[in-house]
Image (cartoon, rainbow over all chains, first blue to last red):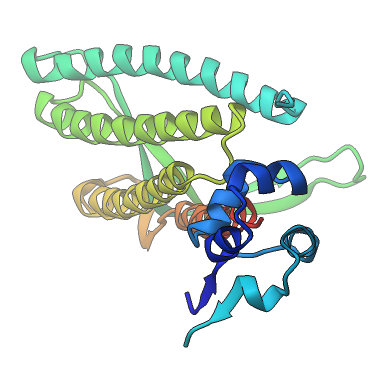
Length: 67
Length: 210
């Protein structure tokens, strides 16, 4: 897929683990792992909002389009 | 995790399928034992009845007496399909029909078994799964095989029996009746399997939506 998820990059920049993010945003580890490894087929606006809010970033920092 | 609550309709069809399946297994074993005996023993007093899916041309005049009508209506019987009773069936003929019976019974049992596996999956809450799609496709393809078999059987009956039988008042026509309903049901189930395939895709998409 041409959309790349850079969640691991943002987590590294914020020095935050996936478990911490999971606890803060209230999304299961399983779902966050799906997102992190790029297996996700879609992301809800509400999820994106929570992640952006927690990591203090823009959606473009997490999602990237590579044709 | 929320416990899966089975709808009543699924429970009803599941139990009907299970009970009917085991009953049909018992009947099949019994039937195959009897039919199989034809290959090993010459049963001289075998009274075989076989369906003739060929139209019969008859012209028989009669009357129709209905309570709602004041007069008796004259009617004419112009066509029908029927069955043939072999009085003291020759063993060779018995064996030919035994082969047909074995084949059709096994095909029907296979469909029944496949449907039972499908309905068991549904009963256990597994709806949109590749296994179910595969089972539905198998049922569909087997129904097509049964349809081909029914066409073959109909023409066999025509060339083997109908044109070689002589009666005083009735005459067989060349109108061989096949069973297109099998093909229609097969098509319906095949379409259903594609709907399930779409459902499977949607389920996967839903599960991979974060």
